[in-house]
Image (cartoon, rainbow, N blue to C red; front, side, top):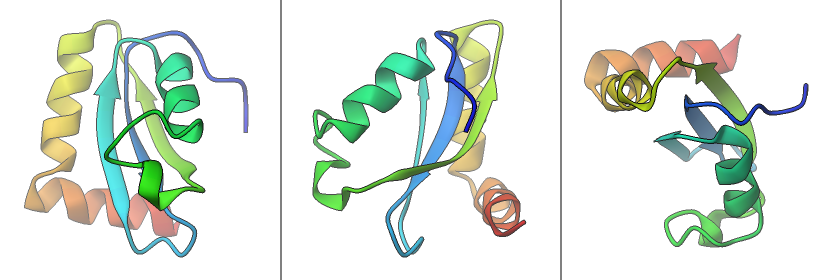
Amino acid sequence: MKELEHKPAAYALCDEDQRWIYKGSTRDLAERIAAHLAGKVPRTKSRLPLKLVYCEYFDNYTDARRREIWMKSGQGREWLKQKIEQ
């Protein structure tokens, strides 16, 4: 995986067997992923180890947050599932 950037992004993490997907957005992707992997995020720490399966960078946090909300919709969940399976 290429080095993560310190930019706003929407992202998805999976547990080992890819049965659970966490969708999020952040102002700084590199910092946020480091927090997830270190077990500092309550929602994901019981699911470690995690794998970054999708990320999309944006010019601003508002757009990243919109993508996160869309990924949590029915249409977005299906789209993300197909992206991960590719």
